Image (cartoon, rainbow, N blue to C red; front, side):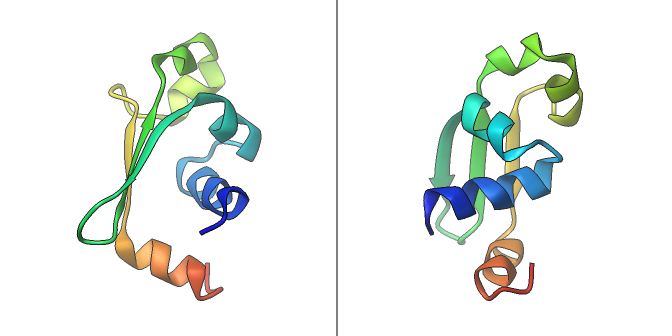
Length: 75
């Protein structure tokens, strides 16, 4: 998946803007089951608006079903 589309899906799933995803995304991994494991940097805590939208550990899982649906254009 293209970088901009990936960031758009992550933004949709987290409630962040695409710009915030681009700024704070630290690591992105596709898991063996097709889900995405998304790590945000702890620098995100510097923005209260961003920090409140993310879990304390800054790790978000995007399910395989969500990824597949988005790639098919149903997202």
